[in-house]
Length: 236
Image 1 (cartoon, rainbow, N blue to C red):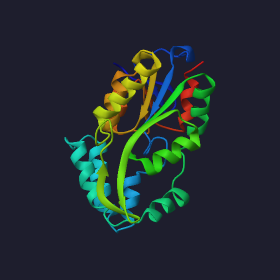
Image 2: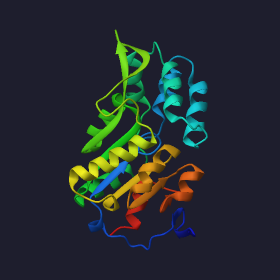
Image 3: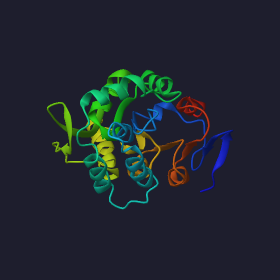
Image 4: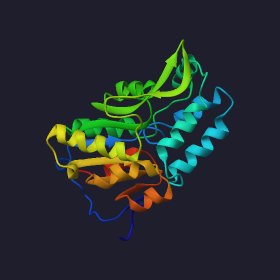
């Protein structure tokens, strides 16, 4: 498919704008570097002086250079052993911000009657807070094991499995569609990293937000300049 520049910094392929809000019933979002301005696992690692080490693994995983995403996340989380929960609260209070245009676009989805899903390879400590802040309907993410106020370097198993990777993001989107009684073609999926491609691949509208090259290449919409509210240029 050829990619065309709809307006500067907003590229489309395989679709013909304007798109209709009425065709969509669900919007699914990645969190780290999509809804928010940072990679939480990297920031937590900074509390134990391991940010560079962890960030290098994260970057390789997001580019799609690591075959086993789950194992890469386990390796990163193991390096977080001993971080106090108070350090995560400080990250949320002092460093975490919504990306430009996110609140506007999410509010537009809600006004148009779409349900909203946050599905993240990050952690419930942050996803729960972001979900509440944006009044999102559903979320799925990883639980960090905590003992005596400190991270143990492990994650907690959940009813659906152990780790949200690309395949689990896809499954979460499909399960949410089934729960809502809608087709996956009625979903919008927004992400930035290689682990977002499986859910973007089954959604009716895939959106790359300031994404890695492999993600931009496959998405129907790529926002390369400006905020997430640039999507509103394509919808009516």
